[in-house]
Length: 77
Picture 1 (cartoon, helix red, strand yellow):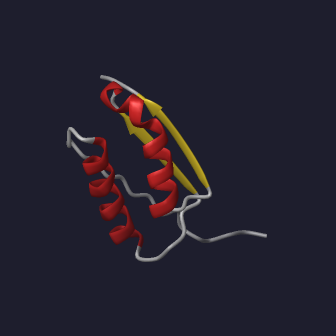
Picture 2: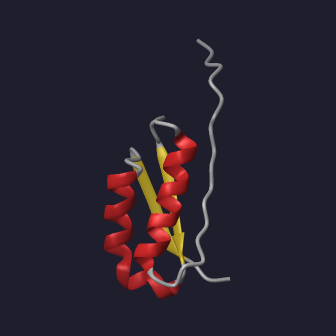
């Protein structure tokens, strides 16, 4: 059996200093783009400045985006 569904991809970025503000910004943008569609997989990449708020990042994305799977890590370029 062949599936013809197209994968939908979206990314959002915030440069906000406060984790809560950054989460609000990217979650609002993502939910607007999703238009009610479900999310199978979400990735969250955040700078070391937000590592102490990792629990908040996971819970907020989980509540607002509701992905089936959420993978995340801190990263710095």
